[in-house]
Length: 88
Image (cartoon, rainbow, N blue to C red; front, side, top):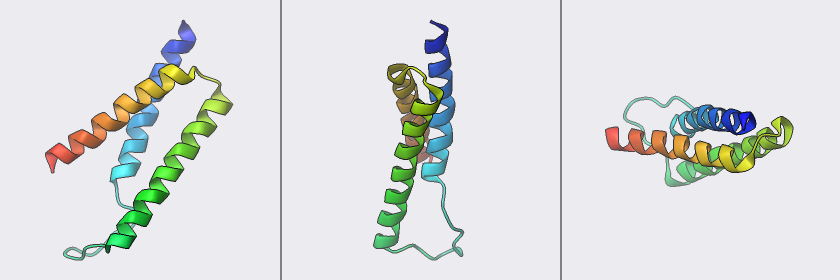
């Protein structure tokens, strides 16, 4: 039971961290300049792959409950992303 609690807490923390990484910029652009469509796609793909690999490594090395971890990670991740989109 305690393992499930830790899995939920770790999932929430990691979900928030990954969502902030996902919605933040890799590089700082001058104001008024927009990235090209290809650059946006490559940035999205790089972040998505990093998030997936980091989550898999965390599950393997920490040995937490995958169901509770993924559930809480998904809730925290999409909660932050959708909140950020709604604020914009």
